[in-house]
Amino acid sequence: MQYVHGYSERESVRLKDQAETLNTILHGDTRYLPGEKVLEAGCGIGAQTLILTQNNPDTRFTSMDISAASLKIAQKTINEIGMTNVEFLQGDIFHLPFEDESFDHIFICFVLEHLKNPVEALSCLKRVLKKNGSITVIEGDHGSTYFHPHSETAMKTVECLVEMQKRANGNALIGRELYPLLTDAGFNGVMVSPRMVYVDDSKPHLVEGFTRNTFVAMVEGVQEAAISAGLMNGQAWQTGMSDMRKSAQGGGTFCYTFFKAIGYK
Image (tube, rainbow, N blue to C red):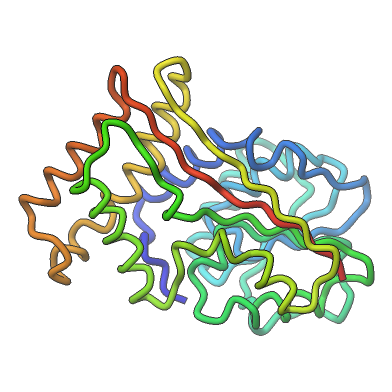
């Protein structure tokens, strides 16, 4: 797996801002029973772990990631808030170090978009899920991006992000594919709900937390790679980003859709 956004400190801050800003929209209805065992696959720096453990304090979480550096940050974050209902583990989704049917539920957020074989990953996760257990999958879809004032040059920068992720064997448009991906992996009763984020001047916390600190920051993160790949020249890129930032200024609006899917074994 190649993480197109990189592992910089700036990216860590962006991920935490994203999780905190979207807590209610994405995770408000993610609830587990006391004593249940949940595997969080691909926890990264623990941005979602922080929310999951606080929202479900009596649930036992195993949060796994392939990056030792990310797990170190995640452990530090959890230690700082004093949560004790999570164990961190380094591991690979395609080679899970667990017995069959080890978990009551599985949670995976913003991971499949970076994988070359998402159906295979889901099938591997299904093996360690108990019968009738649930899997929750959350992904974005950059093709759902709209903003005002409209700018073709700004949209081109988003297209560059989509293309760079494709070249890294990922899929930035994967949100729209969650239903067929889960059914192809053998899950039953799959339900997908779109979670739209709409931002205007009346929602200053979203202007700052989502438009500026999450989405604009994410696109800015591929600037060097996109220009080096010849997808845009430097001047056009700067114009596009300047235009996109106008959506976070007075009178601007921004719209993006996430997709949350739940399936059962």
